Length: 143
Image (tube, rainbow, N blue to C red):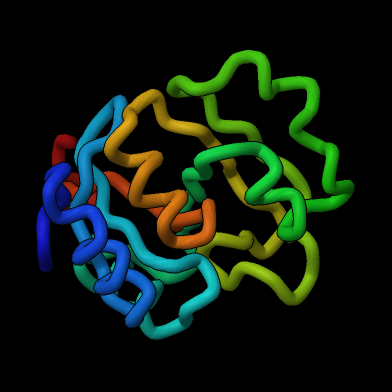
């Protein structure tokens, strides 16, 4: 699993687009990232974390517009966008048929955040603007 650094952004993006999982820095902690629409990649992320498949994984986006096709209504984040980038996660209703569990919860919601980290946003942007990201620690261990 590659760890992201500035010179390797395209290599990391290619790995993610091929269904891989990577570790990358965010503004809060290191995270494990995968495409939120790739069931195999999400399974691998959950296994690396050592957690239950039902526990939700938030998505990090590079811009509110990138997640609009996956949420309903598409403008649901308009009221919180002024607080981003930063460590605020907003929970909104997910559009059916887009992102997969465990990104989409049993209640059909998804947590969304724009990280305050240029490197993380560059990787996210390279992957279409949306990535499923969970802290890189094993489940139950400190970040």
